[in-house]
Length: 268
Ligand code: NAD
Image (cartoon, rainbow, N blue to C red; front, side):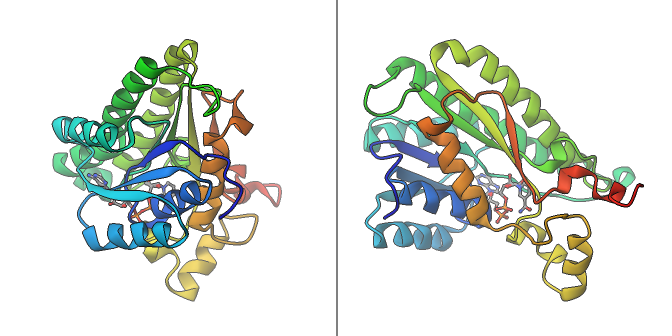
Protein backbone atom coordinates (compact mmCIF):
# COMPACT_ATOMS: atom_id res chain seq x y z
CA UNK A 1 0.00 0.00 0.00
CA UNK A 2 1.09 3.57 -0.75
CA UNK A 3 1.56 6.38 1.73
CA UNK A 4 -1.66 6.16 3.81
CA UNK A 5 -2.43 9.86 3.61
CA UNK A 6 -6.20 9.26 3.93
CA UNK A 7 -6.11 6.63 6.65
CA UNK A 8 -9.22 6.57 8.86
CA UNK A 9 -11.38 8.42 6.31
CA UNK A 10 -14.51 7.18 4.54
CA UNK A 11 -15.08 8.09 0.89
CA UNK A 12 -17.96 7.74 -1.54
CA UNK A 13 -17.17 7.71 -5.26
CA UNK A 14 -20.19 7.93 -7.55
CA UNK A 15 -19.79 6.04 -10.81
CA UNK A 16 -16.85 4.21 -9.26
CA UNK A 17 -17.20 1.07 -11.36
CA UNK A 18 -15.68 2.42 -14.59
CA UNK A 19 -13.12 4.76 -16.10
CA UNK A 20 -12.18 7.81 -14.04
CA UNK A 21 -14.34 6.82 -11.04
CA UNK A 22 -12.63 3.45 -10.88
CA UNK A 23 -9.21 5.14 -11.03
CA UNK A 24 -10.26 7.47 -8.22
CA UNK A 25 -11.69 4.66 -6.05
CA UNK A 26 -8.48 2.63 -6.39
CA UNK A 27 -6.26 5.64 -5.64
CA UNK A 28 -8.28 6.65 -2.55
CA UNK A 29 -8.17 3.06 -1.28
CA UNK A 30 -4.40 2.88 -1.84
CA UNK A 31 -4.15 6.08 0.22
CA UNK A 32 -5.93 4.31 3.09
CA UNK A 33 -9.56 5.47 2.73
CA UNK A 34 -12.51 3.11 3.08
CA UNK A 35 -14.43 3.44 -0.18
CA UNK A 36 -18.06 3.10 -1.21
CA UNK A 37 -18.11 2.34 -4.94
CA UNK A 38 -21.41 3.62 -6.31
CA UNK A 39 -22.52 2.37 -9.73
CA UNK A 40 -25.54 2.71 -12.02
CA UNK A 41 -26.09 -0.77 -13.53
CA UNK A 42 -22.90 -2.77 -13.85
CA UNK A 43 -22.79 -4.83 -10.67
CA UNK A 44 -20.02 -7.13 -11.99
CA UNK A 45 -17.73 -4.19 -12.80
CA UNK A 46 -18.30 -2.72 -9.31
CA UNK A 47 -17.58 -6.11 -7.72
CA UNK A 48 -14.31 -6.26 -9.67
CA UNK A 49 -13.27 -2.85 -8.26
CA UNK A 50 -14.07 -4.06 -4.73
CA UNK A 51 -11.93 -7.13 -5.36
CA UNK A 52 -9.00 -5.02 -6.59
CA UNK A 53 -9.26 -2.90 -3.44
CA UNK A 54 -9.55 -5.80 -0.98
CA UNK A 55 -6.70 -7.63 -2.78
CA UNK A 56 -4.35 -4.80 -1.76
CA UNK A 57 -5.64 -4.88 1.83
CA UNK A 58 -8.16 -2.04 1.47
CA UNK A 59 -11.79 -1.83 2.56
CA UNK A 60 -14.72 -1.16 0.22
CA UNK A 61 -18.22 -2.16 -0.77
CA UNK A 62 -20.39 -1.53 -3.84
CA UNK A 63 -23.74 0.28 -3.86
CA UNK A 64 -25.96 0.43 -6.94
CA UNK A 65 -27.96 3.68 -7.00
CA UNK A 66 -29.05 6.14 -9.65
CA UNK A 67 -27.63 9.45 -8.40
CA UNK A 68 -30.46 11.41 -10.02
CA UNK A 69 -33.09 9.86 -7.68
CA UNK A 70 -33.38 11.82 -4.43
CA UNK A 71 -34.77 9.07 -2.18
CA UNK A 72 -32.27 6.49 -3.44
CA UNK A 73 -29.37 8.89 -2.85
CA UNK A 74 -30.56 9.51 0.71
CA UNK A 75 -30.82 5.74 1.29
CA UNK A 76 -27.28 5.27 -0.07
CA UNK A 77 -25.90 7.79 2.44
CA UNK A 78 -27.93 6.28 5.32
CA UNK A 79 -26.51 2.86 4.51
CA UNK A 80 -22.98 4.28 4.35
CA UNK A 81 -23.39 5.91 7.78
CA UNK A 82 -24.60 2.58 9.24
CA UNK A 83 -21.63 0.79 7.71
CA UNK A 84 -18.76 3.29 8.06
CA UNK A 85 -20.24 5.69 10.65
CA UNK A 86 -19.78 8.84 8.56
CA UNK A 87 -18.36 10.32 5.36
CA UNK A 88 -15.17 12.37 4.99
CA UNK A 89 -14.74 12.55 1.20
CA UNK A 90 -17.35 12.72 -1.57
CA UNK A 91 -16.21 12.35 -5.16
CA UNK A 92 -19.12 13.40 -7.36
CA UNK A 93 -18.01 11.59 -10.50
CA UNK A 94 -21.00 9.86 -12.12
CA UNK A 95 -21.77 11.28 -15.53
CA UNK A 96 -22.70 10.47 -19.09
CA UNK A 97 -23.21 11.91 -22.56
CA UNK A 98 -26.33 11.84 -24.76
CA UNK A 99 -25.03 13.60 -27.82
CA UNK A 100 -27.09 15.24 -30.56
CA UNK A 101 -26.94 18.25 -32.81
CA UNK A 102 -28.70 21.09 -31.05
CA UNK A 103 -31.73 21.19 -33.37
CA UNK A 104 -32.21 17.44 -32.99
CA UNK A 105 -31.66 17.26 -29.22
CA UNK A 106 -34.69 15.82 -27.45
CA UNK A 107 -35.93 16.97 -24.07
CA UNK A 108 -35.21 13.48 -22.81
CA UNK A 109 -31.53 13.74 -23.88
CA UNK A 110 -31.32 17.14 -22.21
CA UNK A 111 -33.05 16.09 -18.98
CA UNK A 112 -31.10 12.83 -18.64
CA UNK A 113 -27.71 14.55 -18.85
CA UNK A 114 -28.66 17.46 -16.59
CA UNK A 115 -30.38 15.06 -14.16
CA UNK A 116 -27.37 12.78 -13.70
CA UNK A 117 -24.39 15.10 -14.30
CA UNK A 118 -25.68 18.17 -12.43
CA UNK A 119 -28.68 17.32 -10.22
CA UNK A 120 -26.99 14.06 -9.19
CA UNK A 121 -23.99 16.04 -7.93
CA UNK A 122 -26.30 18.43 -6.07
CA UNK A 123 -28.18 15.59 -4.34
CA UNK A 124 -25.02 13.80 -3.21
CA UNK A 125 -23.23 16.99 -2.13
CA UNK A 126 -26.23 18.05 -0.02
CA UNK A 127 -26.32 14.75 1.88
CA UNK A 128 -22.55 14.79 2.41
CA UNK A 129 -22.55 18.43 3.58
CA UNK A 130 -25.30 17.74 6.16
CA UNK A 131 -23.18 14.98 7.67
CA UNK A 132 -19.96 17.04 7.57
CA UNK A 133 -21.71 19.83 9.51
CA UNK A 134 -23.35 17.42 11.98
CA UNK A 135 -20.01 15.79 12.76
CA UNK A 136 -17.54 18.68 12.37
CA UNK A 137 -13.78 18.39 12.31
CA UNK A 138 -12.34 15.27 13.91
CA UNK A 139 -8.84 15.92 15.14
CA UNK A 140 -6.29 13.43 13.89
CA UNK A 141 -8.44 12.50 10.88
CA UNK A 142 -8.43 15.67 8.74
CA UNK A 143 -8.11 19.43 9.19
CA UNK A 144 -11.40 19.84 7.28
CA UNK A 145 -14.86 18.71 8.33
CA UNK A 146 -15.26 17.26 4.85
CA UNK A 147 -14.13 17.43 1.26
CA UNK A 148 -16.29 17.43 -1.87
CA UNK A 149 -14.64 16.87 -5.24
CA UNK A 150 -16.82 17.47 -8.30
CA UNK A 151 -15.82 15.79 -11.56
CA UNK A 152 -16.24 18.57 -14.06
CA UNK A 153 -14.50 18.73 -17.44
CA UNK A 154 -12.54 21.03 -19.71
CA UNK A 155 -16.05 21.62 -21.09
CA UNK A 156 -16.86 23.83 -18.13
CA UNK A 157 -14.88 26.42 -20.13
CA UNK A 158 -14.58 25.00 -23.68
CA UNK A 159 -17.87 25.20 -25.61
CA UNK A 160 -18.77 21.91 -27.35
CA UNK A 161 -21.02 21.85 -30.39
CA UNK A 162 -23.09 18.69 -30.63
CA UNK A 163 -22.92 18.29 -26.84
CA UNK A 164 -24.86 21.29 -25.55
CA UNK A 165 -26.49 19.30 -22.73
CA UNK A 166 -23.13 17.95 -21.53
CA UNK A 167 -21.25 21.26 -21.72
CA UNK A 168 -24.14 22.97 -19.92
CA UNK A 169 -24.02 20.37 -17.14
CA UNK A 170 -20.29 20.99 -16.66
CA UNK A 171 -20.64 24.79 -16.76
CA UNK A 172 -23.36 24.38 -14.13
CA UNK A 173 -21.07 22.26 -11.98
CA UNK A 174 -18.52 25.08 -11.98
CA UNK A 175 -20.96 27.60 -10.48
CA UNK A 176 -22.54 25.02 -8.16
CA UNK A 177 -19.08 24.07 -6.87
CA UNK A 178 -18.01 27.70 -6.30
CA UNK A 179 -21.29 28.67 -4.62
CA UNK A 180 -21.20 25.61 -2.38
CA UNK A 181 -17.57 26.34 -1.53
CA UNK A 182 -18.47 29.90 -0.52
CA UNK A 183 -21.43 28.78 1.62
CA UNK A 184 -19.71 25.81 3.25
CA UNK A 185 -16.21 27.18 3.94
CA UNK A 186 -17.22 28.59 7.38
CA UNK A 187 -18.13 25.00 8.30
CA UNK A 188 -14.57 23.92 7.35
CA UNK A 189 -15.85 22.07 4.29
CA UNK A 190 -13.72 22.27 1.16
CA UNK A 191 -15.37 22.01 -2.27
CA UNK A 192 -13.32 21.78 -5.48
CA UNK A 193 -13.57 20.42 -9.00
CA UNK A 194 -11.31 18.41 -11.22
CA UNK A 195 -11.52 19.33 -14.90
CA UNK A 196 -10.24 16.35 -16.88
CA UNK A 197 -9.25 16.71 -20.51
CA UNK A 198 -9.32 13.58 -22.65
CA UNK A 199 -8.98 10.57 -20.37
CA UNK A 200 -8.96 7.08 -21.89
CA UNK A 201 -12.29 5.61 -20.70
CA UNK A 202 -15.42 4.06 -22.26
CA UNK A 203 -17.20 7.46 -22.40
CA UNK A 204 -14.96 8.72 -25.27
CA UNK A 205 -13.92 5.40 -26.86
CA UNK A 206 -14.64 6.72 -30.38
CA UNK A 207 -11.98 9.40 -29.85
CA UNK A 208 -9.09 6.97 -29.15
CA UNK A 209 -9.86 3.43 -30.30
CA UNK A 210 -8.35 3.77 -33.79
CA UNK A 211 -4.91 5.24 -34.61
CA UNK A 212 -6.58 7.84 -36.86
CA UNK A 213 -9.00 8.97 -34.15
CA UNK A 214 -6.20 9.14 -31.58
CA UNK A 215 -3.97 11.16 -33.92
CA UNK A 216 -6.79 13.69 -34.39
CA UNK A 217 -7.42 13.83 -30.65
CA UNK A 218 -3.73 14.46 -29.94
CA UNK A 219 -3.81 17.65 -32.03
CA UNK A 220 -5.90 19.06 -29.13
CA UNK A 221 -3.40 17.99 -26.44
CA UNK A 222 -0.09 19.94 -26.36
CA UNK A 223 1.45 17.48 -23.91
CA UNK A 224 1.08 14.76 -26.55
CA UNK A 225 -0.64 11.91 -24.75
CA UNK A 226 -4.12 10.88 -23.74
CA UNK A 227 -4.80 10.96 -19.99
CA UNK A 228 -5.29 7.90 -17.81
CA UNK A 229 -7.72 7.35 -14.91
CA UNK A 230 -4.70 7.21 -12.56
CA UNK A 231 -3.82 10.82 -13.51
CA UNK A 232 -7.18 11.85 -12.08
CA UNK A 233 -6.99 9.39 -9.16
CA UNK A 234 -3.70 10.87 -7.96
CA UNK A 235 -5.11 14.40 -8.12
CA UNK A 236 -8.26 13.35 -6.23
CA UNK A 237 -6.12 11.89 -3.41
CA UNK A 238 -4.21 15.14 -3.10
CA UNK A 239 -7.38 17.28 -3.20
CA UNK A 240 -8.94 15.07 -0.51
CA UNK A 241 -5.89 15.26 1.72
CA UNK A 242 -4.67 17.90 4.16
CA UNK A 243 -1.87 18.66 1.67
CA UNK A 244 -4.42 20.85 -0.14
CA UNK A 245 -6.09 22.19 3.03
CA UNK A 246 -6.04 25.84 1.87
CA UNK A 247 -7.68 25.08 -1.48
CA UNK A 248 -11.42 25.56 -1.90
CA UNK A 249 -13.66 26.80 -4.70
CA UNK A 250 -11.19 25.95 -7.46
CA UNK A 251 -11.21 23.80 -10.57
CA UNK A 252 -7.91 22.07 -11.23
CA UNK A 253 -7.59 21.05 -14.86
CA UNK A 254 -5.74 17.83 -15.59
CA UNK A 255 -5.75 17.97 -19.36
CA UNK A 256 -2.24 17.89 -20.86
CA UNK A 257 -2.80 21.51 -21.89
CA UNK A 258 -6.14 21.11 -23.70
CA UNK A 259 -7.37 24.38 -22.17
CA UNK A 260 -4.32 26.25 -23.55
CA UNK A 261 -6.02 26.92 -26.91
CA UNK A 262 -3.51 24.76 -28.86
CA UNK A 263 -4.93 26.13 -32.14
CA UNK A 264 -3.04 29.35 -31.34
CA UNK A 265 0.32 27.60 -30.85
CA UNK A 266 1.47 28.74 -34.32
CA UNK A 267 0.37 32.35 -33.84
CA UNK A 268 -3.28 31.51 -34.66
P1 NAD B 1 -17.43 6.08 -17.86
O1 NAD B 1 -18.52 5.90 -18.87
O2 NAD B 1 -16.30 5.11 -17.86
O3 NAD B 1 -18.03 6.14 -16.41
C1 NAD B 1 -19.24 6.78 -16.11
C2 NAD B 1 -19.67 6.34 -14.74
O4 NAD B 1 -20.87 7.03 -14.39
C3 NAD B 1 -19.94 4.85 -14.64
O5 NAD B 1 -19.25 4.37 -13.54
C4 NAD B 1 -21.44 4.76 -14.41
O6 NAD B 1 -21.79 3.71 -13.52
C5 NAD B 1 -21.72 6.11 -13.78
N1 NAD B 1 -23.12 6.53 -13.96
C6 NAD B 1 -23.76 6.87 -15.12
N2 NAD B 1 -25.04 7.17 -14.84
C7 NAD B 1 -25.21 7.04 -13.51
C8 NAD B 1 -26.29 7.22 -12.61
N3 NAD B 1 -27.50 7.61 -13.06
N4 NAD B 1 -26.11 6.99 -11.29
C9 NAD B 1 -24.90 6.57 -10.83
N5 NAD B 1 -23.83 6.40 -11.63
C10 NAD B 1 -23.99 6.63 -12.94
O7 NAD B 1 -16.89 7.56 -18.11
P2 NAD B 1 -15.71 8.39 -17.41
O8 NAD B 1 -14.92 8.98 -18.51
O9 NAD B 1 -15.04 7.60 -16.37
O10 NAD B 1 -16.55 9.59 -16.77
C11 NAD B 1 -16.57 9.87 -15.38
C12 NAD B 1 -16.77 11.36 -15.18
O11 NAD B 1 -15.67 12.06 -15.72
C13 NAD B 1 -18.01 11.93 -15.85
O12 NAD B 1 -18.61 12.90 -15.02
C14 NAD B 1 -17.45 12.59 -17.09
O13 NAD B 1 -18.27 13.65 -17.56
C15 NAD B 1 -16.13 13.09 -16.56
N6 NAD B 1 -15.15 13.39 -17.60
C16 NAD B 1 -14.61 12.42 -18.37
C17 NAD B 1 -13.66 12.76 -19.32
C18 NAD B 1 -12.97 11.74 -20.20
O14 NAD B 1 -12.24 12.13 -21.09
N7 NAD B 1 -13.14 10.45 -19.98
C19 NAD B 1 -13.28 14.10 -19.49
C20 NAD B 1 -13.87 15.07 -18.68
C21 NAD B 1 -14.79 14.71 -17.74
